[in-house]
Image (tube, rainbow, N blue to C red; front, side):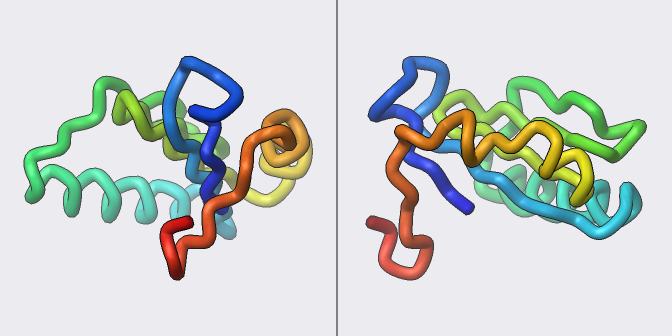
Length: 94
């Protein structure tokens, strides 16, 4: 899920919320994102939670990426917390 939080908060423009099945999966997703963006010259300002892998937050400044295992995603429910933020259709970008 991609939320346009820039419409409701100054912390970033977009928040991406992803679910991995288990910590190994969330770490693999994080690795894939950071390695591919590094090839494009984008380096995260900070990565938090990688060692545990239950909730990994990647800070790219204007874009925040959150990768959760299912029970942690359900517990924190960022979709509800940011419910005022419009969802972005990732197929069309709007």
